[in-house]
Length: 175
Length: 171
Image 1: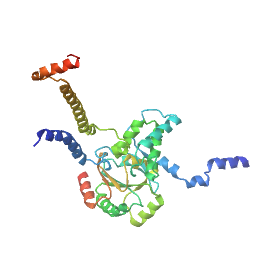
Image 2: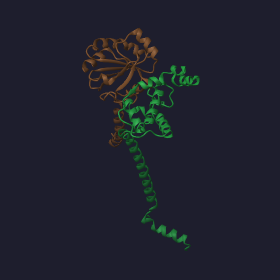
Image 3: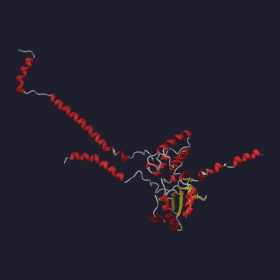
Image 4: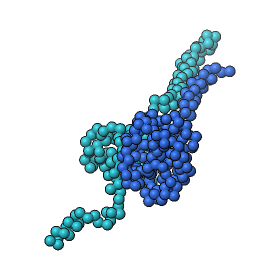
């Protein structure tokens, strides 16, 4: 009888250290609505860990300067990291979770936000300068080539023809 | 004047100036107000007194949701404004509710006992509700209309003028 009572006591009565930690009890009492349902079924532990790590590395801690969720020791980052893990375990995809945070904190929450179309325009002047430089180099090279050809295309002066004939005769070993 | 050089300079510099000018209109580090105009995320939380609170239950009436903590000095500056607003607009049908942000409930209880409050203060385990509202610091206040749409988000302490003008628009 005594062992049965002791067993019942251990099973049904919470130990004192469990009573001190009320976090788990409180967590069950709080819930917040998600904008959409998870697109996938809960992933296996290895996949979940990899997804969580990627997201925690790619998303920015909202109260820090340039630190990812995984790099920041702040309470806000820890809460965000835990939330990411929860959502991954519920089956939310990486895109869903990223969009969830972007919708709330703005594109800034991504450490490397996707490039926007108008930002591509920034490279247009750079490309124009590059094309111009290439044009100058090619045009300059052709011009130099043309000058060299002009040097080689020597047209003898007709008035010097007798002299030229004499020189050539002497060179050929004539009288 | 060398028109060719001027034209080439304009071709290069004009797009740069246009892009930089467009950038003046948006600060990527600014906290996003993207939730304004969208449906407020509904939540079920527990008050410091252990009572259940559901935002869904407040639908049909304007609601002010204030995220705060006892370690936040601007929250203490804001507190009298909330008190006055709750006294004036509570009888007119506006709900006021506070969500504790990364704080200890015992400290919040002690502060509210001393400073008073006319609204339920909710615990936010895991900070899920704060994340759902994109809270990046406290105080942050969300004005939710009777349809459950967030009509305004204020980062930092709400002044009396902003509080009154926003509530008047919502009523």
